[in-house]
Image (cartoon, rainbow, N blue to C red; front, side, top):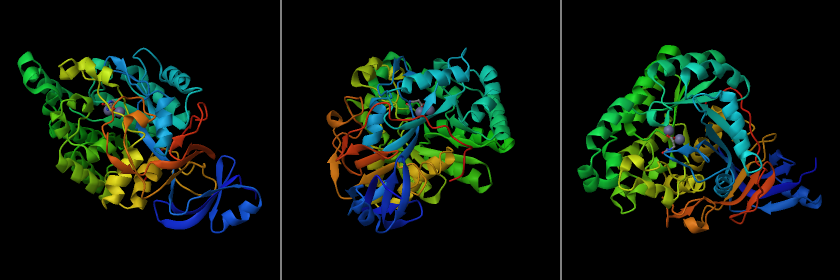
Length: 466
Ligand code: URP
Ligand code: ZN
Ligand code: ZN
């Protein structure tokens, strides 16, 4: 068999183990993984990439991304161009974005709009989750959506002001439908009624002058997330529908998911890199409002519990919830915390954060990193084994990282379209020295060398298990 490229001499990492092996690429796929492939291939004119001393990882799969999303009175600043360039630099070779239909639009028409957003721009592969924003209209459309290769829908328990909120009856019914048709429901779990009441109590000039952006965290105690997770787990337990809790930020949430899993409820959970390494003390900074995200950053105890949850297994995935805004966009708050565009960039730093603060800090092994960033997300979202693993027949989506090389995060040198970074100045190892997307080199020596339009839509099969 003839190979185009062989990545030789690296340590190939899977969720199950490490092996010194060469990885041979033919066209868009991995053709073989084994010893001695580089030597043979060099004689036949293949390009040989020397990966001695490097980790060779499956490209990461970030299953929670918002590109060019209309939100909080503006549009998130990373689109399919900058967002996927950032992904490439961070070793993320597949991302899943959220399609947000308007209330009077069909799910399919919203999906078509999202295809148009990505067309000609995406530099890495992508797929979509579709949000339910008008349950009576949208729930009957879910079976056709699942059949079309989009098996995951999302409901929000908050965001009435965005017109996105689903009530308990809608969530219950959606779980019944995904159960029947082999899909999965993703839920943003926060308790709307009490959250709104807590916000209302403090939404006045005196409190805002006194506490500023700190009110963002002061009005969202942990029970806001925990109560909602508990409630939606009840609906999953009652219906048997598969539930996936997105961006879980609290230790309380992890406890609830673990207990539910122990009694056999079909519930999975992701957390995001920012909840593992940042806490709400950032709101004491002068620019603390930049860190407003939803759910907001929690306490150090929550971080510890989430790391534990990753180890024990109740937390299956680490994603980013990338929803970038520039300083100018964040400045729209003008002293009123309820108007801060919520979200932060993440695609470019996901792998470096988890490698540095997880693997190098001995909170997880490199195998665990591959499980949580690559293999589990691919399995759970119906992309495996095309994505999420280095094996013959899989797409040649590969990130090569140098375990020793630290790079200081500097938003001015990044592909992400923001003029700030939550991790500015942090020395992180684990940026992609090289990234391959379906066999094509798209990052070389830490620089993006890909092209717009290379990224391809990925239809997905039924959600699997980690
Ligand atoms: O603040 C965030 N995370 N913005 C994106 C919307 C969401 O709730 O995921
Ligand atoms: Zn959300
Ligand atoms: Zn989100």
